[in-house]
Amino acid sequence: MEKWLVVLGIWAMCAACAILFIRGATARSNRREAAEEGPRVASRASAGDVTRAALND
Image (tube, rainbow, N blue to C red; front, side, top):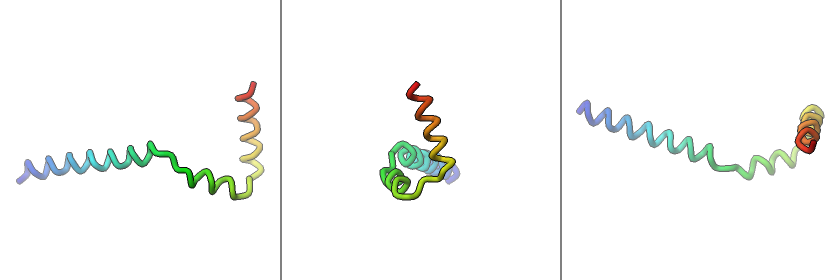
């Protein structure tokens, strides 16, 4: 009985890790749409401009 609990625990851990990995590896398109619809915060906009300028140089 104890052997089966260990095997079941290992399979459950592998399944949980696979689910979390797949959820983290897939892109969410609705997050970008929600960010574009909302108003831009001044501090985030200015930081984005600095980053964009640094990347363009």
